[in-house]
Length: 191
Image (cartoon, rainbow, N blue to C red; front, side, top):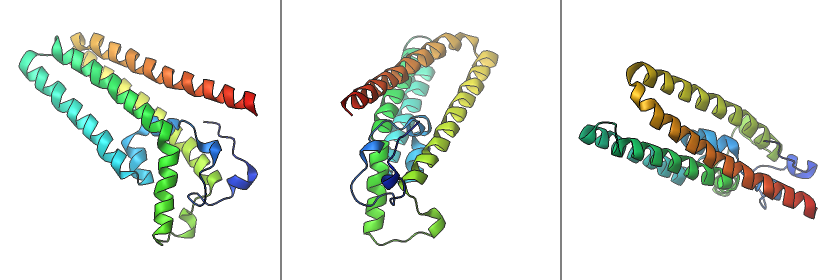
């Protein structure tokens, strides 16, 4: 996540004034951390939305498993919800920087203060997002490795739908990456 922020914007307090155009891009840390990222940045509506999607998906898939076993409808629902979750996370990541800026601007407008060590500048926000991206990728990969190990040991027949869902989710992420890279090329050509 190589965000090029001007020197003037880099030292500006995060949440003050107009949103820097340099931050108007997909935040991959928000994509991979989802609900945790929203909690960290105080984006409460998205916390509820992302938790609701996850809980709803688990409820429906588990219900279908009970009714039909994993074959058929439960496997299909698992794949559909997995792809839908990655798509929603991609949309969230596309707007995450602006959402965090707005949440911080509201906090500043309310007069609530923070200890000086917690005050963010645009540059510190950018560095924090790079660290959150690394954490998010690490946790996502660890979750997939653990999940596949559990499936392989307890229910090898579930590996095919799970792998298909992972590939579809990766395709959704690749689509977001492609769109974001095209936006970057177009903006660099116009500069």
